[in-house]
Structures are given as C-alpha cells and as structure tokens.
Length: 78
Image (cartoon, rainbow, N blue to C red; front, side, top):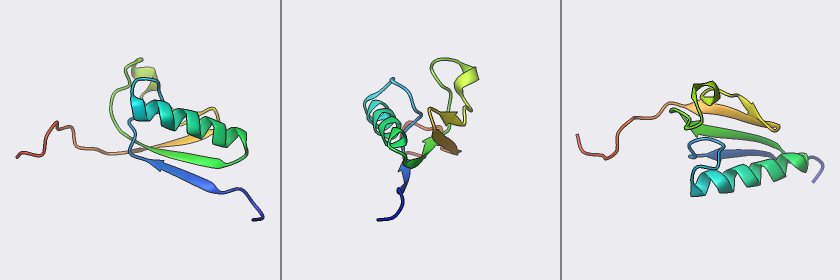
C-alpha cells in the first residue's frame, strides 16, 4: 500500500470523554492521526456538555469534524 488510508467515523455524539463510544472514538482517532492517517468524524449535532464554545469546533488534534443533522427525539413513537 503506497499511502495512508482516509478514515471516516460515524454515529458518535462528539469527540469527548462523556460516554463509552465517544471515549473509544476519541482514542482511536487521536492515535490514527498521530500515525499519519487522515481522519474525519461525522458527529451527531447537538449541545456539548462543556459549553456552547465547543458545539461547532471543526478540528481536534488533527481530526476533521463534520456535523450531521439529527432528530431530537428519545424514542421512535410518533
């Protein structure tokens, strides 16, 4: 293989330490970028627990973050 892969991560809320999958994704993405991979995280939109200034942060330690609109609903009932 000639070059490093481009990696896309989907489904997490954001790169933070607030939950199980978020911790795993943050650790994996950080380590992959340190090894030269291009990593993009497609995060669910929503409010960050650390404050509004973190809501639309587009890069974190070399990881590109993009936000995907989500439905603000706790269940699937109409």
